[in-house]
Image (cartoon, rainbow over all chains, first blue to last red; front, side):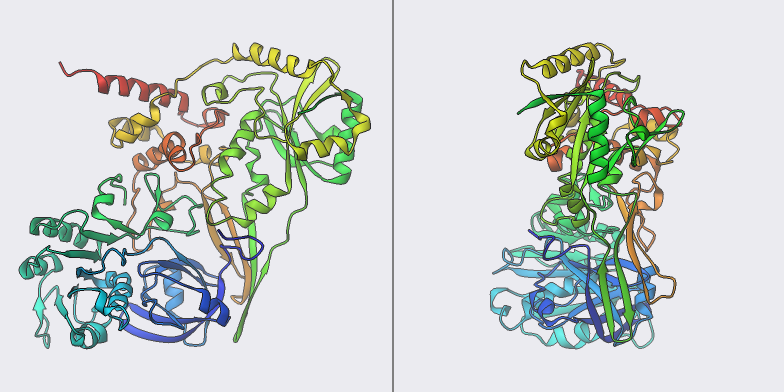
Length: 283
Length: 351
């Protein structure tokens, strides 16, 4: 329970952008550090959680934390330039001041996933929340707790692939890890797979045995990925996704991210497919 | 708890003393058919004969626009400063439905994440409830578990009597407010106050123009999200949002920054409405509630089901403001009655 005397949850903590990585023409990854080392130390996120990023004078937006909690001392947020706040954020450079509050929401069930194989299916910027869990399970101290890791990732074009270093170089070299990358349409210079993510998934045809599938991407991709997984025999309790909703407060007060009586900011953003099926189709 | 009686003259003295010692917010008649809760400077400004304020008094705990904090940025630093803290306020002359509205808002702004702005005001606010003496045609508090003489949740409960007012003390905070000015009050030794209040309650119970049956509605809505009925309702709704603006339990808000120079400014929040199309529209364009059908359904499900699911409290207190002010006469009492009918029809065996 937060105590108003010690901290007001709607008031962000000042932070500084220390590095900006251009991922795609419209996605940048921001490395941020709280100005107060104590706040940095006490900020204990779990993979899948989100935070509210402030650009003072412009406002706030809910962004998933894309760095793994095993990476100490900084937070990473990968942000696609789509609206007012994200456009303002894209104009910022290392050294600029921002605000961060959180972490908010539930997280991927990484405890339950122990001993299981993991299948990640991401599309576009949808890889950002999955990356926190991928790097968490691949971290040296956790790797032994999890089985094989498969990552299927796609984007519209080579230019639109996020985290190129991770998907093309770092992750494929990790033990027990396979990365399948695809782009929507053929392109000169690309020798990898061409085609949509759901079709590629069916082609790879992973077995559901002892496995969790975790997916995030554009709604249309998620829809067909869920259908494909069902066809392959994945049960609704083996499939996990993370939802995006418009949020303002992040703490279950402002009333806009509800799906039925659940608030995505408190009860989500991570849902099992079985939970999702219990909710009204309003997301 | 104790009960007291105060004469009309002494009530005036008491209120003037409260105005001197606290911030007193009370119903003020602004113009014909418009009464609002406002801070008052003297007893004569107050209109205790009002039936229901035009806008609910929730704004004294959750202001329509509220400054949250100020920010000052420079190249190497950003400083945040809290907006000023409120002093003790007395919300005087609240109707029972509006007290119930505050009780419905309390758990929203409480919980794992405390809303400091609401909490600070709430802890510094004393609620003085005033029993109704009339029932308006749109009132239906008695259908929603309340009643025109039910002051549950208040600190003090006032009942108009022949030569003054009866005061029932409901909390220790209320007791303090009486004790501090004890010379103005006479102890009610023979339960005259509660007797008068009971009689008034009985008299008013028969005056409601409509009684609706809320039983089973939530359970029906638990099972039925998609209903053609919401389409019908959406065709009438203009999406103007007045229902959410005047509602004592609506709590949706927006957060926004204002900064004239881009370096320093203020972050505030203001009431927002789930009836507006941009409310849930994401930056990328996707909108989970894209049409009036989804939005009106969300509002009524919030009142009749979601609030109950989350807090085990009704999201509607039966104040009737939305019925009174809706430009196309959407009436939540009729919606409840219609849903009862839809539920009955749903249960009929197929012939």
